[in-house]
Structures are given as structure tokens and as C-alpha cells.
Length: 352
Image (cartoon, rainbow, N blue to C red; front, side, top):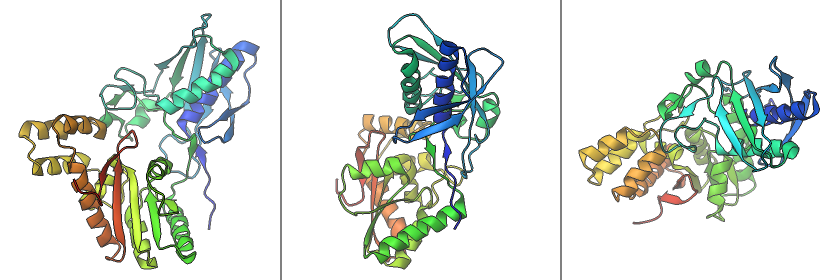
């Protein structure tokens, strides 16, 4: 089986380019390689290139074997270093970086689309050199506005370019057939070890959320978007129980029978929310507001206001129903839905 190559996120690129920018300005020499830390405590050594503009550096994004639209793009950074020692780091959007225009995102309206963890990575790296000095960090991706047309940024209300993303700093490869093979192999291994229960999560964030509440099942597999495939495998291998846990925006799709949760395959989140809110008596005005919500977080705000949060119990139960069918009725299913804060808002085993 081919060993899939990992890559690094745009957040890691931005952190490395920003570090190089302050090194160049404080030493007079632009480094060709910098080492940065990641949120999972893995160090990355990334090649750096300088532009014709003094102090402005870039890193070429390498997504590894992941089919990522940002692969090969140039993530640029220039850091303006101030004299004040106030510890403040400001972020600005250069060419090709989007601006948030809708509430409910991880960043405030009007802010550049540089997510919180990449911001923290950038701050951590530049403060190693400049300490508490005031800094203004401007990130650019020269062809970012064109690349953003291939993403969901426009639908999410991020206008004018790409987002700087990443929760771990590392891009895990998602090449479909090879990834499915490796996922199936891991599931087979756990079953051969005598395990009859398994925790299936979309990724690392889902696993962390689940482990706050669950001690069992003992083993977790990060299934990416391939829910249906993994459920089929679990049924064939004779797993008695599977717990599916993760962010509500992804796993709610199971309630509509959507078994590949990648946004490019199917979405339907607003339609799912509106259907269940309507069944609980939501007015036409509220349904219209929910239908036009740009993010799941915004929809949750509306549902809380209208005392309609019970819909998540029904969505979880409906998801478990479809998931059990996908196993050929061979495996008991529990679906747990988390909000952005890691709080359980839907559990197919709970009654409300």
C-alpha cells in the first residue's frame, strides 16, 4: 500500500513566512529555511523565499497527497514591527485573502479570514524574535481570489479570497482509494484484536470532543468524510456497536442519508435544519431565517432564541437510523453531535 504523503496547512505557511519576515528585518538576511512549532507539538522545517519587497517572504503550500485547491500557492507575509512594547499583533488581509462578512464564523465580521489557530501560530513565532513589540502582519496569496471560487468561502460570507486555515498545522492526506484502504485496514485490525465496539469520528477535533465524554469505545478511527464506507465495513466485520461523534455541521448530514460528508459531494444542512424546525412548529418567518443562514453556528443562535434546540435530538436519531441501515442492520449505532464549543447538543441515545 502506498504511504501517503502529509502536507502542511496555509496556517503553517503563514507562520513560517511571518517568522522569516521578522528574521530578515532584524538580522538583514532572509533565511532559506525556518523551523516552526505546530499545535500538535510537531516541528516543521519549511523552505522560505524572499520577494522583491524588503521584508516580504513567502512559502509554497504543499498539501502532500491531499487534493487541496491551495496546493502550490504562494502564502506571503510581511510584518511591520513597531516600537511600542504593548504585545499587540494586528492582522491585515493582503491580496487574495478573504474578509468575513457574516456572523457565526470563527472570526469577527470585517476581519481578515485568518482563523484563530493560525493567528496564534503566527504570534508565537514572531514573538520569539520581537518579544512584546507591536506588530502588524499582512498575509497575501497572489491568486487567492481566483482559487477561492473553487471553495465554499463565498457561501460562508468570506469575500475576496481564501482563508488561512488549519487546526494542527499538518495536512493529512485524503487521496480517496488509498485512504479508504488504510481506513478499512485499521478497522479490520481492531476487529481482529477482539474489539466489538468502535468510535468513528471525522477527524482529530471530533475525537478530542468525544473523549471529553466517552471512555468507551476504547478505539477511535478518524474516518474523514467516508461515513457510509466505514459503516459498511463495520457491518461486514461484525462490530456490534459504532459511535459516530463529531461537529454538528458535518454529521447532521447523516439524517438525510448523506453518507459522504464532503461539502463538494452534498450539503443540505439548511434543508435538514428547516425540516426538523418546521416539524417542531417553527413559523414561516423563522424557517426563512434559518434557510438563509450562512453557517450552522448562525442557525444554532436562531434555534436557541426560538427554543427549538430539541431538533438536534431528532436529527441525531434520524442519523442513527440511516447509519444502521448502511451497516445492513448489523451494528447498533449511536450518533453524538457537538457544537463549536465541544458541547453535546444531540445524542441519539438521550431522551428530551
